[in-house]
Amino acid sequence: MQNQAPLFSPPDATYIAQERVFLKNIITDRWSKYSALMQWLEVSADPQRTAKMFSHSLRQDSFFSKATHNSYAWRCERSDGLITEWYTDDRERWAGKIILREMQKAKLLNGIIVITRYYGGVKLDADRFRHVVDATQQIISHMGID
Image 1 (cartoon, helix red, strand yellow):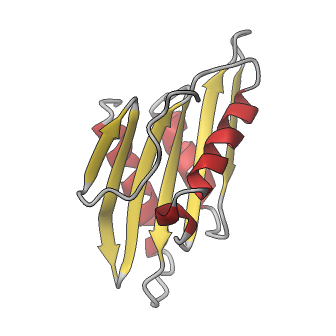
Image 2 (image 1 turned 60 degrees about the horizontal axis):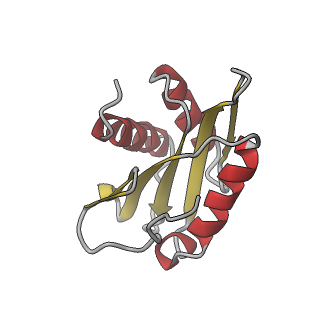
C-alpha cells in the first residue's frame, strides 16, 4: 500500500490513479447518491491486513468519512493459491454480500470494491439492492473485467 495516491473527493465523475478507479455519483435515486471505488490490492502473506489498511485509509478521506454507508468487499488469491474473501455492509444490510457476489461472478481477484451511499432522506427499500448491484457492475465494467 505504499506510494498510493491519497484518496480525495475529485470534482469530476471519474478519477483514475495507480490502479484505482473512482466513479462519483454514478447513481442518483430520490436524492440518495451512489459512488463506486475499486482498488487493486497488493497481495501479501496477509490479504486481510492489506484490506484493513486500505479501509483505514478510506476513513481518513472526508468524502468517505461523511458518507452514510461505505459497504465493501474484497477477494484475494494468497500465495498458496487459496482465495480469501470478506465483506462488510456498514449498516446497509446485505450490501457487502451483494458486492462480493458480483466480484465472484466476474472472477475478480486481488481487489477491493467500495460502494458509497449518501442517504437522501427517502428510504429506497428494495431499490437499494439494485443500485448496489448496478454500481458494482459499472465499476467492474469500467476496469475492463467481464
